View (cartoon, rainbow, N blue to C red):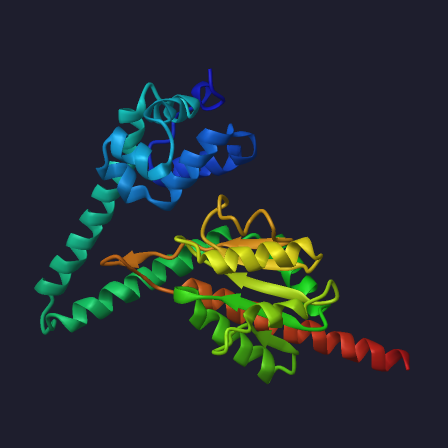
Length: 287
């Protein structure tokens, strides 16, 4: 009997996610693989068949049943109901929002609804971060980055705007940093300069940029402290980082915002700047 079977089954996606993350270190390899896929692709779990999900996740269909039973469900169909309920709740909320917009006096159509959708998603993302951010991880990350001689910043694709902002903000705060980007394809040569006296901020969300994951692993192997911003405890960045943050960005129409991620980046930049300044004051007072 699974651990979850002795307790109340999770009846919503947030509860299910909490249960999975609490057990992630003890999950068998194949079950951990489907658990990671489920958290990263909840819509596919809700819509797919056992056969199609198994193919996408790279496991056997029987693994889906074992995954469900491990969590205390009597079968995969029961577990799938939690993911389908998530969609119903999300769609219901969206329809209610659109109905409110349509019914509102003077409400404009089209572009205003798009703006409202992204504002709503942004507020949800910020609310989740406010409730779930690990303050201990935040303190460790800032302390690690503040001790670094140079902070290397790595991100690609959707994550790149966050990296660009971090480089800008840290530069304005007088913190030495290196944004790893090179039109000449010199990223490996730039990263090669990083040493254990430095640190790296690495940002990647599913589907993770392979080059970013490879670079982060290489830095960690060379003893360079890594601070990661990602979207799942099953992210390949979580296993190589000294401190990592799970950011759950809400989406609107399939497009995810970067609101919470940007707020976290601003916090890291200002926190490191303040820590560096406090360190300089302490050194001057000893002189």
